[in-house]
Image (tube, rainbow, N blue to C red; front, side):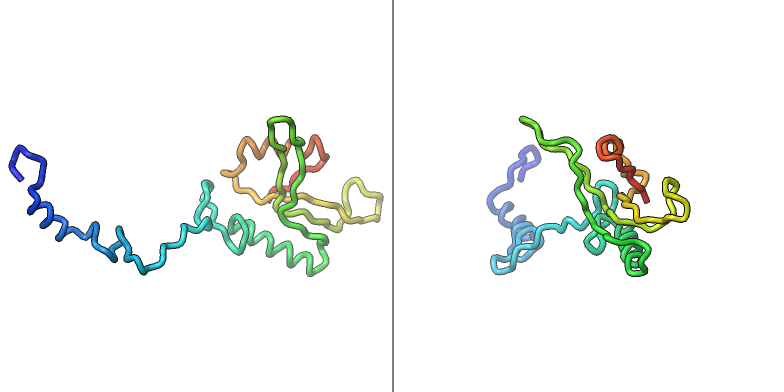
Length: 158
């Protein structure tokens, strides 16, 4: 290769490629033909809110809360625990998809509630969403307000 030229001579190119492992079989850049393809990256990595999927839940915090709620159900403090319950907010319209809210947990809790008759505790249904302050997006806030307006449900945030 001359000083002003950017081209390799054929001999220089072959020598360069022999030293380079870029195109050698079995290297990181070019795996051997008999090696299986690498699996696609798992979606279990961090999300845009830096949550790490744990035990099938969207975050460590949600996984811990699910464990707590399951223990509470075994103890009889709550009943009818359901996960990932969808609520329709706006039905499908022409050219538009439906808008829905998916609650992390829905359960019934036993207690003396403010609106109850004196000495008459009863089971009340709660819709719960596990949130960190960073994940309270504008879309979530609008859906939370629609849940109260349309279904009369106040979301319990933990």
